[in-house]
Amino acid sequence: MLSTKEKSVHININSTYYGAIAEIGGGQETARHLFQAGGASNTVAKSISAYDKLFSDHFYNQGTSSRYVAEDRLRKMLDYEYDELIEILDKKNTQKFFAFANTVETLNFSKTNQGNGWLGIAVEGTDRYSPNKMFIHVKLHENDTLLQQYTLGTLGINLIYGGLFQWQDPQSILLSLLDNLDTDRVEVDYIYVEGPDMKLVDNRLLNLMLVNNDMTPAIMFDQSGKVQQPSDMLYKKNVIVLRGYFRPINNLGMEFIEDSLDFFKRDENYKPDNTIAFCEISLKYLMQNEKVDEKDFLHRVDLLNMMGQSVMVSKFYRYFQLVKYFGQFKLIKLRIVVGLPAFDKILDSENYTDLRGGLLESMGALFQEHVKIYLYPYIDARSGEVVYPDDDHFSKENKLLWQYLNAIKKILVLKSIAPKNLEIRSEHISELIENGDDSFANYVPDKVFQHIKNNGLFGYNRNNKN
Image (tube, rainbow, N blue to C red; front, side, top):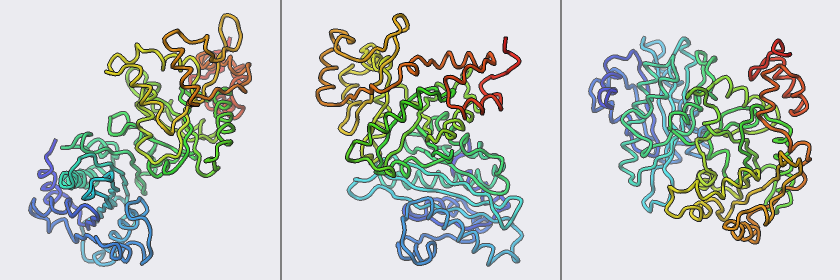
């Protein structure tokens, strides 16, 4: 791994690029590295920090006002700086062009905010007038403004170095973003690439790499499958989360989501445009032989999007970790849809031996003020009867806890689920698909059935049919 100074020297001396650097909110930390390395005249055509909001609007927003630390502002900064290079130097400079920009909110004097920012680079590839672009969003975890500035400078150099020398391989750029850094200092929770040479890059897979490489704990896709930055997607929203394998989404999962939404519509805070339902997949459910099965992952996301669902992938195992993650966003309310078997595991004290407060500590972390659980029953495999949660279902040590959570209305039982759908088992559906048995159509939405059959997903092969 090259040091930040070595990368800066390499950019100045060995690259064939010439460009502009625009930084707002965290000083000119990236440009500083290049100037201190020496030979910056070979690389830097311009360095600017339009720190005043009116100056920023004048250059990058045509004199109007909008959010300053946002992807839209970053895009305008990159477009402006790259277009200016073309306008002034196109006929006078034979080097390739690049533009780097960031717009950042560092820690304020009172330390009452979360440092975060957007960084991006536009790099000339095969088309001088249509550059390839990469955008990332980061959270700054250090509790000191100066340290955050140092981190930004290192991160900026990593992005420029990757953009200039590895622009044909976005995955390598991603993996090098935290060179000379670590996740205690900075978190990269969003990445997006575009451009004439990036048409074959799937941004969903790039973002999955962020989770798989511990660069962020979770990523999100909207109903159309587009990658979304979590803070933007969740700001002042009600959130309903259903965890599962979703291989594929089945009728029971769809009924859970629909019933949960119908239940939540009775809440005074509900509005169609402020409520999001997520199908959340734990990273461990995507692993095959200790590696992520990328095709399998994309198939699951495609089918969920086909059914109008937003998707979340996380590295969380325990439910209270999921709640803690959502707690950093300004949510209105959080509702988690849980089956009774999973809820029994939540109440199992053996799962919390690593916590000093054990089960009670986990309950305090899980049932925060804005959180409730929507609990649904299950079918007893032996009797075939629907088992609803009641006092007799729980062990003696958990009965009082169950009664307390009910008394304060932290748990709401969904009783409208059709018994025939409660019999659905993901393992059984997977077995039918792999055997080419079309009777799995009885357990999944028709569109899902047709898509799996027509495209041979999840091991479906009609030739396997007995």
